[in-house]
Length: 430
Image 1 (cartoon, one colour):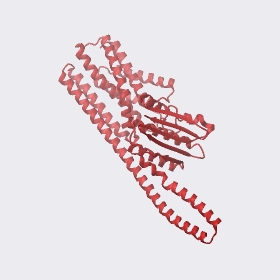
Image 2: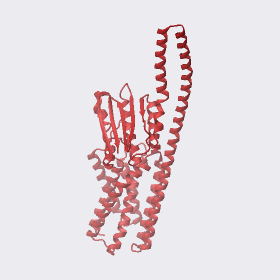
Image 3: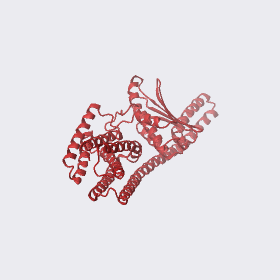
Image 4: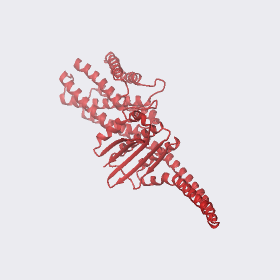
């Protein structure tokens, strides 16, 4: 291989890997100048290691793992706690790059039929690999995030990714040792083996993800059932008290004590209104949500609001069973908006969140209102900005994600309306 293209290829590979890592991890909260200093340090260190051990293929592959360690040490925020999310992203991006590199490299060897790669051939190959790598990262990242959303799966995911990396390393080692790049049977064998392992990887991670989702569903249903039982007990108590109050009013009427009877009647009306609102209305409209993931999300946020002593109101008068967009994106979007609403509400004395779901034909409208400090509107608006969060250790669930979803779905519209008392977000899906 031409020396110049060899140097250029390594620099481009390291740079693309780092940009992919920053893109997947949404690390926009890193200072730009500081970020590029880290990138330069990582590239130079990794390049020197690569150059020193270039003649020994196996050790050259070992330098890739050294690159993992250097990148992790430079990018990790919390030095005291191991960040499975970051190390998994580092390994994942390298797997994508290695896979694309091997497939394109073998394909180009078939096209040019020569062992020595000229600068022009190497540059064209590098350009194709870079473009395909960028496209793969862009389209695969949402699925990767969906599977790895649960932070508790970090060690298991890391084990699977390391196994896949070792398999790729073994593939490259065998191809390099046998020098059989031009043999179609060997090429087919490795391509099918990689596709097969990729399928196993997806199946395994998806199975873990579904197991965690089902566990959360069971927990939500248990809480839901317990609350319904408590509501039923409150209704029975209310029925008993209601009868006693009616008997008392009846006695007052018989004794012609109309003013006292009128007073008790008003108290009965207020009492019954409060009791019915607290027992029946809390969950009555939840049954109209026929979309399981959305229902479990709403239950989770309702339980969170109850725990935080937030007054909430949920309304859904028509049955809702589907989103006219990707289910994962829709549920994630609503989850982000609800989290931001709850966080903003915690800043005020009167904590209240209103959620209204309105389904008309094929148009779904979801309105989320929350109280906030009027004199701190800028703080509330910051909750909807890229990467902003008040919780330490969080990446920030800001408007940048919502904007990305709005741009990728032509039928999704998100509007914001601050008033004197409520900050309102309206989501419309047509």
